[in-house]
Length: 411
Ligand SMILES: Cc1ncc(COP(=O)(O)O)c(C=O)c1O
Image 1 (tube, protein in one colour):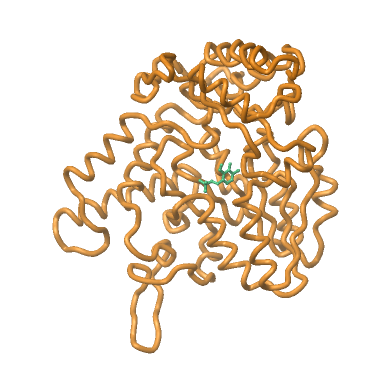
Image 2 (cartoon, rainbow, N blue to C red):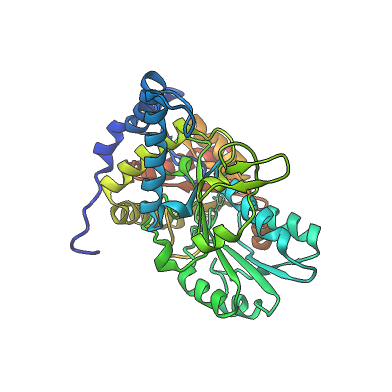
């Protein structure tokens, strides 16, 4: 471990999260579904409330005090989001979430593709980074290729390179798999993509919330993530794009706020990033998102990452020491541990754990192609964040005993 690394104190941070005081079935809530969405600290809830109670107004419109205050706070959230990933202000577009960010790209870039052009994804992609490309490819006659995932849950880099051809225009890959916890070598992939003249997109929904991410270090062209997975409100996310690329791209949604001048015949678009933010944006969401970024920066992303890695290592070691438990994915992973217990269905595992106050996810995790590759219909998934503790992992593992009891010999 880095000697200068500040250890995170999950126990004391928990006091900032009102929901963690809840009881479920009379038992303390153990929230291990952070890959789906995260809980919100009072600093985020307070920032949203403050906006509605004290300066609620539309942005970029009224020349009055409230509107100026709302606009300042909205733009400050853009600055925070851009700095958080090492980007410039004009390179960060607020969208609804990762899904909308990728759809923006699919429509804006994908529709420019020609017949037989290729888009390269991997077999471990979330539906959000698969369905938009697949559907746009169908419209234009392009092909979607998938780099293989090896038995140990890594993208096979030989297959990745071999899948790239002179027709590969776009490569879009998850930084961290939401099922396997695999951390993909996106920097190396960006270089391979660029050597081939392809654009490189990173689905960072499971990385930006959990580890330091710098778009210049990765060298990607685009990167997408969601506020709700990093302590912020739902309904707000980011699309980062290199400014020269965004400048040359057509907007995905048209309307107010994204224009400079409109005549009956034509429209000149606004400057970046507003060109891509048509209509009244999610102002309260952006302000809450800004507060979430402040909160995370204050703790330090290195500390968040190291805390989660320790938890996931501990969880997988403990799970693997139990009979008949299979854990999916590589040994070195982010804070996500997917597993199955013998032939017990993942939904049944999740349902019994819920009775114990433990929230995990059971199912295909919006990655059905990966599930079919793994030869399973679903898995149970525990995913960690900065407020989770080793004691909670112990409770998870001991509650699996109850699952085994209920489902008899199946586990
Ligand atoms: C890897 C990955 N990509 C994309 C998404 C989609 O995120 P959102 O639902 O916020 O658009 C998720 C959500 O779980 C994810 O895990």
